[in-house]
Length: 550
Image (cartoon, rainbow, N blue to C red):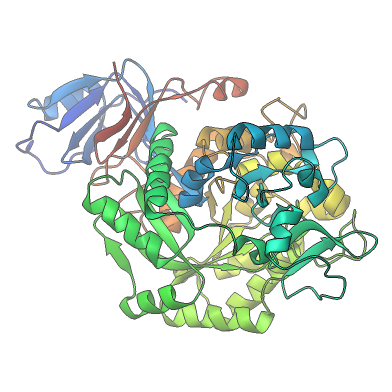
């Protein structure tokens, strides 16, 4: 796109330039993509008291606000701050306090990372980690407890899969849980324990059974949790994330966020989803929407229907192509789900439901329909990963927002079609199909499942390729989005998904000056170079929270 220099397209609030303080400024010598349809591009922006007051041609902006100091962006690109439409913020920080197993390519590499992390750990102490993905390993098979027992016989081990929907325990951990043999134990609703040919547990616990082990792991201290939150805030700033939709929080986390806000340490705008119905939801339901200053909003509830595709827990209408007889897991009964949907609607809350498989997505549709959901509620489908094509018009009719994660497609492309077969995959990761059907999108990463860098998601959306540029031409490239559509899905569309389109999502007069300065123009450079772009600076409310313009 060419830079628009027409002076007719400028925005002002009021006729006279107001008195300004020392923290207000003009940011000039920039390539600004505003995400405002009336003036999509500009070269200067005036900020007063943390809000945008004008964007346009540099001469027009400086003439309108002659008393503002001028800061140069040195020709760099400025975008509205990225919002991650689905992440787990405390999890982002807490993973840094455990063994990081993402990207491991063998069991041997997992073991080595555990040894490097744990060092001379005392006997009996737990070893915790997350991020393994057996699909990346040579045999692509689930590991077993015996793989861990050989190296850690005296320390209980609990390692969560990358998607958080399966866990891997050693024998020491299972013995603490009172599990030696469970040949006769029936799997609970929404979970399973993998067993060998003799019926013995292998050490892999899927979805609802994970609590058997995780409930025994040591709790993080308040000091640990404060440290985790601080680490998450620092990473968000470094990634250019000015907004987060936190997918499932409890009252303790909400109170921690509020304390950090009071201490002026909270540097993102948080749209928090209550983690299911229960005590936290009941308390908030009585008070309806919680707005804590301009950095925390709670007005939605996060529900779960199924597991994940990688662990074969995603609920499918028909059996897995690579696992005959298995249709995945519905984590709650349909009756219970419909009941909590109705309860949330009665409280006036937005409903955001985890649904990955096509069966889970159909249960979601039926539950929303039965409860009387309408487009005005802006209810969401968190992931919308595999959808029966015939169900797509029902999403549009209900006004459901598809909250999706582009890097899930590029992470899953090496196994998704194995799981689903050539027909069902047509309804998988179908961003273009959904958008063209009139279904609003909201993009995120699902961190710490994926990395938190929104530029990774941007690249995945416009190329449908891994960061190794595979496959050539993209994976089902007909589902790609344009760069403009992708940027919207990470900015203004996320604002809409959180009822915040009047305050956030674009660099328009009257909205918060939340923006990111990039080293490269990701809207025009060759797509492989997007992966080389970096965040130069991040601003929230006009204040720089990361980087430098020098």
